[in-house]
Image (cartoon, rainbow, N blue to C red; front, side):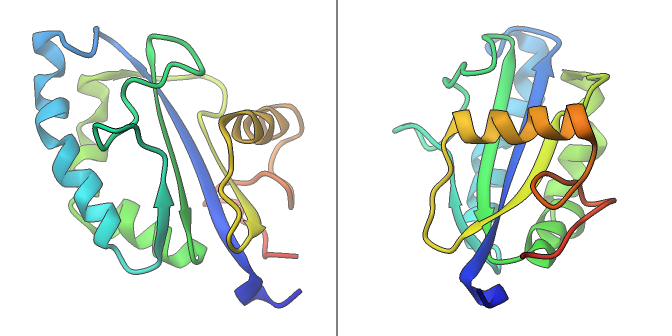
Amino acid sequence: MPVACFHLAQLNIAQMKYAFDAPEMAGFVARLADINALADKAPGFVWRLQTGEGNATAIDHFGADKLVNMSVWENIESLHDYVYRSAHNRVMAERRQWFEHIESASSVLWWIGAGHIPGLDEAGERLELLRCRGPGPRAFTFKQAFPAE
C-alpha cells in the first residue's frame, strides 16, 4: 500500500495535578480552545477526538484524573510541526504546572489506513504495546519513528 494510503494516529495521556475545574488549572483551561483551533487549521491535520463541547476533557476512558488527546494527521512531519513549531509548544513548555510526570510512556504514534478513525480501545492497545515492547512498527514515538508499512 503506498504511503499516501496511510495516516498517522497519536494518543497522549496527561495526568492532572489538580481537578480540571480547580483554579490551578485555569492557565491550561484558558488556552485549550485556542490550541484545539490551531490544530484544526494546521497543515496535515485530519481529525481529533472531541465531545460536543469541542474538546476531550470530559472523556475519562483512562481514568478521571487523566486528560486524553487523540488525533490523526496526514504524516509525522505535520504532527511534529504542530507539536513543536507552533503556539502549542508554549503550552508544552509549561505543562509541569498542570500535569504530573508519568513514568511509563504516555504518548504513542501508529500508522492507520487513510480514512480510519481510531477508537480509544485501539489507542490504549497501542500505548500498552509501546510500554511492554518499546518502539516498533505498530507503536512508536517521535524519537524512534517507523515508516508506514
